[in-house]
Amino acid sequence: MNRLVSRLSSILKPRTMEITSSNFKEKLPEIEAAIDSASFLAFDGEFTGLNAYRGISHFDMPSERYDKLQESARQFLLVQFGLCTFHYDPATDNFSHQAFNIYVWPRPCSRNAPDPRFLCQTSSIDFLTNQNFDFNKLFKHGVSYLRPAELEKLKDTLKGRQDHRRLSMTPGTDQNQSIPIPADQEAFLARVHSKVEEFVKSDDQQLELEKCNGFQRRLIYQTAREKYKHLSLTSVTKTGGDRVICVIKADEEQQQKMAWLKDQAELSDLDVAFGFSRVIQKMTESGKLVVGHNMILDVAHTLNQFCGPLPESYQDFKAMTTAVFPKLLDTKLMANTIPFKQEIFNSSLEEL
Image (cartoon, rainbow, N blue to C red; front, side, top):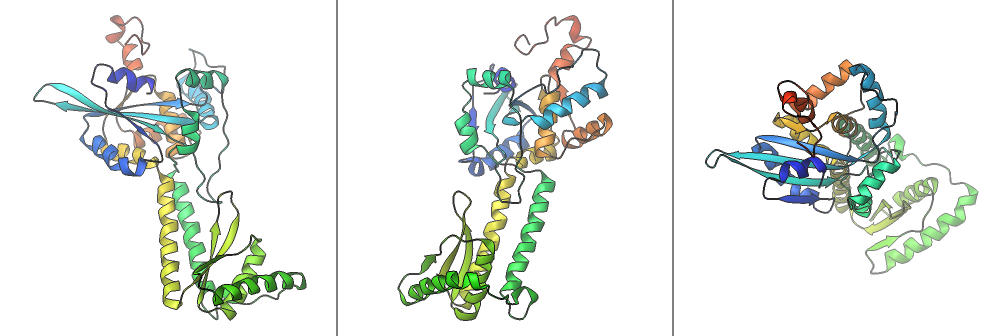
């Protein structure tokens, strides 16, 4: 479990839940309910690296430190988010808690989705390895995420493609105009038509055509509209990224229903891709106090990955932080501020 969550939870009976893509959808309502009922929240991140800029100095002005910090947040990834919700019981005058360790990974959900590059720092990877961090679980089952603006852009692109797809099925539209068939594609189309004819005469309900390029797929769609009114053709992306055409026997009503279901499934896939960002949105909506230790890097990574690109200026960064986390409390800053500084001689998390 993340270091901060582990420390805050050590005085309480452990109730830690590991979250991956396998159980995120099921557990999201529980996470949201825990945030809603919490007295305050705490979080901590694990990263692929910490310092992209080695010239950090104790004499840095806040704006200078931020200039260096934002480079680290842009170049490295936050790969695990530890969230702890604390709940006060006035009857017993005690706190209980729920802890969630969430693997997060920027999984591309489509060809238009962000496909980020990132750096790794040897010392950080070595630290994670020594803490038995499961990299296989991260890469295979990390919860996906998108920034809100990225989600809206992908939705707009998808809706445009869906509208174009519907128009291409409507006779007389510009999108439905036939294009000449090049001579070098006639043999390919003849081979496809032969397979489709055999499929029509058979009792099979579905046929997968051979892999072909985008232009060939358009030719297949064009000729299918002219010859096979009772068939539905759909492009399918297989494991590995190959796109093929799937042919299904269906009348016009069934084809319209299938097209609607495909539209809804594509929109649902985008909602799934938004993933972990919903947790950050819920934390913002709750307005709850958020506690951390030396948490400037945690905050910067969280904003940059799940909310939006970090602004260039320090003042804009403060405004962005306040918008996402209205109430922040850093225990390291408290420990180094009078009157606590007079009583606390070591402000490291382990000592606190």
